[in-house]
Image 1 (tube, rainbow, N blue to C red):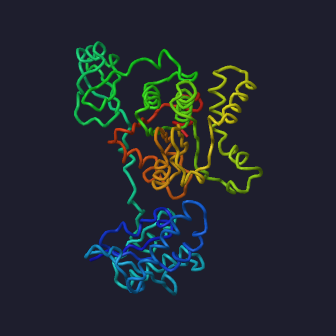
Image 2 (cartoon, helix red, strand yellow):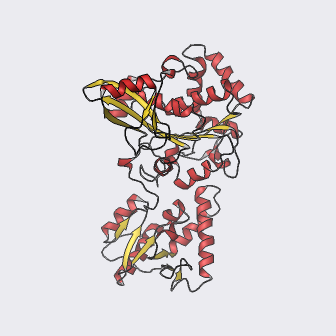
Image 3 (tube, rainbow, N blue to C red):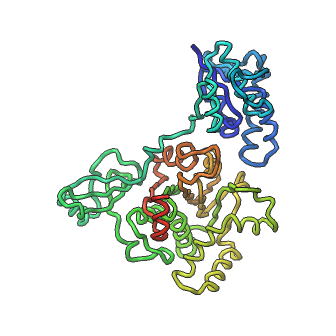
Length: 440
């Protein structure tokens, strides 16, 4: 029996292509969804963009037939599913749901279609609504078209058991044939002596069938006043300082050094090595209360509140462990007055072309896959993009560790030579921060 997918509004706001994601199955939109899309269409953000794009798609489809009875979603397919917009009336039996609430009216439509004998699957990204749908007897699912298996997320490094002879040869020759054939581009390896776990070597896939030794450059030389404190940080810095790798993703818990490493590499590559013309830093604005527009001051003054974590890291890097805070503040001010560094709201990145810049997108776990695509596609010639974030600290109510743009990018780009990734496991901020990250 053909499935009929009833979509909640948040599915369409999450992805404007959601309607076209159900292949030969039918899709139903309750009238309340259309009303909610109308409320969102004027917003100047990703939700507004998706609402407008969905409305334009619906307007195009309705010209091909009666949208109440059903119109083909894809004219190029004989087995295309149908799209319907329907409304419901009355109440759901044996429930006390308030029908003045739009979510409950959407549930009512799905429930009545099921009562009429249709094979209904209700799709919503709202966890509470999934609970209510299940409680009234509906089959309910999250929208998983852009989901990945977070438990199997690519971490950028693998451990390989080896022999003393091969590891010694690796140190002598600096390059050996890759011990396994399925390494991803720019993937790191830890060769461990099967007879002595303390005898090991770090290497990386050079994308030509060889494994190159990760030298100790970062152990002896600082990158803008910092040294890596563990092997994952060393690998991360190696990716960040490699101009041939245009996209770097760093995933890690609080205090693991994601943002600090990215900023240090950006300063080193831009100011000392002149590989880039400027540094652009941004992060999504996910407010706890009112949004950015309600804060006093001009754009830069508004942004300062949201970018304070960036300034904290810059302060640490600039004074290099010294107590001279006035000096570090002046250096940071000089960075911005000289236009060598810029902080920007993601709202203003759409439509831009960004050439020859080192771009850092912090807290990328709060972005949707489409938002990440929009940002990365802004990269012009000579630009490096770095996405950092912690999938366990997501503030966006419609994203989780498996559906956010950061982890989606890691999985989709892991076999591309322009991309490198490392997952940072250890918190290095302080003993207290490490304790909190592990036990709280």
